[in-house]
Length: 305
Ligand SMILES: *[C@@H]1O[C@H](CO)[C@@H](O)[C@H](O)[C@H]1NC(C)=O
Ligand SMILES: *[C@@H]1O[C@H](CO)[C@@H](O)[C@H](O)[C@H]1NC(C)=O
Ligand SMILES: *[C@@H]1O[C@H](CO)[C@@H](O)[C@H](O)[C@H]1NC(C)=O
Ligand SMILES: *[C@@H]1O[C@H](CO)[C@@H](O)[C@H](O)[C@H]1NC(C)=O
Image (cartoon, rainbow, N blue to C red; front, side, top):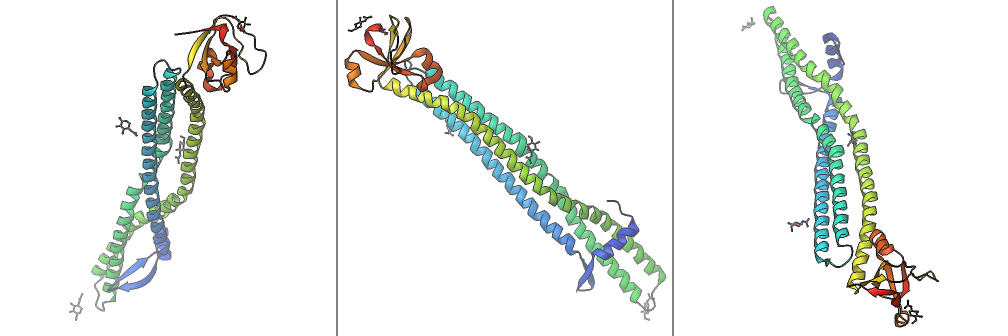
C-alpha cells in the first residue's frame, strides 16, 4: 500500500481521535490499530502454544518409537532359538521402527518447520509495533509543542516554523511505520485460519497414514505372537513320509517331505486315535497363526529332532 505523504497526513487525521488529555500532551488514539495489536498478541500466544504442543507430541512419538523397539528386543530375547519365528520378531520390530521414524520425520518436515517459519514473522513485527508507539509519542509531543508556540501572543515566526518542521519530521517517521503495520497486522491475523486448518490437516493425514501402515505390520506381529503361544505349548516338528490326501476340511493335506509343526489337538479323542494336529511349516512361516491347521495321521510322519 503506497500512500503519499499528503494522503497519509489526512488518513492519520481521520484515523485518530483525540480522546483524552494527559497532562499537557494530547494522546492520539487509534482503536482500530489497538484492536489489531491485541489480535497480534493473541495470535503470537496461540502460535507459541501450538509450537509447544507440537514439540511435546513429537517427543511422545519418539518415546513410543523407543519403547516399541525396547519391547521388540525383550520379546526377541525371551524367544528361545528353537521356537519358530524368532527372526520374524526382530524384523517386524524393525519394520515398526521404520514406520515410527518416518512418521516422526514427516511431522517435523510438514508441521514443525512450517510452524517455526510462521512464528518467525512475529519478533520483527513486535519491534515495529513498539517503535510505532514510541514514534507516536514523539509525534504527539511535537504537535503539542507547536500548538503551545502558536498560542503565544508575541510568537516568533522563526520558532513557529522550526516547530512545524519538527512536527513534519515526527509525522513522517511515524507514518512510515504506521502505514505498513496497518496493512501487515490484519493480513497476518487473517492468515491464521488457513494455517491452523492446514496444520490440523497435515497432522491428521500423517496419523491416518501411520495407523494404516502399522496395522499391516501389527497383523503380522499378532500372528507371530500366536506362533510363540504354540511353541510354548510344547510344539514339535514332524517330517511327512507318505502323501496324505485330506478327506475333510479339518484335515491337513500333505506331500512326502513336508515339514509339519505339531500343535495341541483340540480333542483328546483324535489324539488317542493316532491323529495329530499340525500346520505346514511353509505356510506358517508366511501366514503365522492364520495358516491352515488340520488333522493328519501320526504314522504318516516321523518326528524331527
Ligand atoms: C529403552 O531401553 C533403554 C535401554 O535399556 C532405556 O534406557 C530407555 O529408557 C528405554 N526407553 C523407553 C522409552 O522405554
Ligand atoms: C502441510 O504439509 C505440506 C506438505 O508437506 C507443507 O508444504 C505445508 O507447509 C504444511 N502446512 C502446515 C500448516 O503445516
Ligand atoms: C513575549 O512577551 C513576554 C512578556 O512581555 C516576554 O517575557 C517574552 O520574552 C516574550 N517572548 C518572546 C518570544 O518574545
Ligand atoms: C497307519 O495306521 C493305520 C491304522 O493303524 C493303517 O491302516 C495304515 O496303513 C498306516 N499307514 C502307514 C503309512 O503306516
